[in-house]
Image (cartoon, rainbow, N blue to C red; front, side):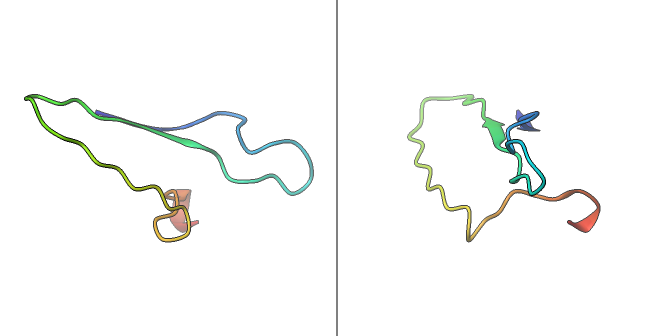
Length: 50
């Protein structure tokens, strides 16, 4: 339903980190949901190929 980047979540300074992301899902029926988080295998999508 929604995929956004968190504004100003990369920290301050000369070498800022990447922005945090938010994923929102809508479940249309009763179901089980399992999520695995791993930022090294599935990094956040970059803009303009970044």
